[in-house]
Length: 472
Image (cartoon, rainbow, N blue to C red):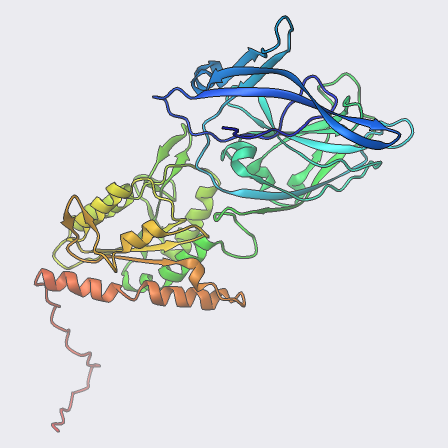
């Protein structure tokens, strides 16, 4: 099976390939790999291309387990296949990918770059490297070459965030700038370092980088800068300074309705699926405000503020487990079953779920408690798993046990986005539909437990007034 081919790198005996490949790794299986290294060259005659010739440099065999099991997951082996000839070495590295599915689109420009060409200026291009866990760097992107200029403007490019930093927003990203030469001996102009978190600030004073040559012997004679012209992210958590993201809109739309039925307006707000500082442990029920002892936020605005702050400190990370959050709220609901309190759990998710069986069991167990679950799906993913949890068509079950009540309501946020861009209208429509089942779910619990409403308080009578009853 031919899994893929790298790009061709011209005129070099030490290629550093940009293209990466994603493989499923199974510890318990032997996964054999073979790497073939052909080389190509073109035959010209009086400016006419005759044909493309291919030569064979060699091949190398290994297993995926060899790469993963090597120190720092870095394997170096010689090329073979040609008797009596040394063909060089191949270096392979592997890293476990995070669950991050975001992409970023960026555009850069530079000014006053160093002049490298004798008969012209420079032909600059940029090379991006992500840092590895062992402190080394791996190439992850090259821009196009902009010919004969010291003030290039490169084309926008889109790159997966996990290719750039493996989902770690604070991981160092190194950028080198070179002057392109036809023979492959590209001249180094300078470099700088940044991080995805810094890039995500967008075009600002933080995104003007001085190009330094401190690691090389020659010194610059001009002030060189690279500027981030634009930045956008497909991350559903991306904080646009001009509008709420999908998570915040869903939270605000639903929260502003249900908060009217809470007496103290203090709400516990939890996140799931992230690495927490300072030790990087993965948590599936962490307080957004960072206070393990008191996760309560003051009103919906307090929740939004805690959400925004948490994005600056935690690293989003898979897997995505729902069961811990459902069980967390269920423990509180189990302690108050006399009808004096009713709990509503709002889950906002991109649809990925890693513990479907455990979540179904948690919902079945919670169905006998005074609680309801609202799930709002954001993004463009398929939400088949969320529809199954909703249980409108088929009552959810676990281990042969049906849920006592239907307590889950799911809606995809994208169905409520107004085509004119009117977010107020979108949020109003979302809140109306997502909360439609809550009254019936509340009443069904009270009726099943024989809990009746308290007697209505007597009507208010202002001092000095007497009610006059008229019989009709």
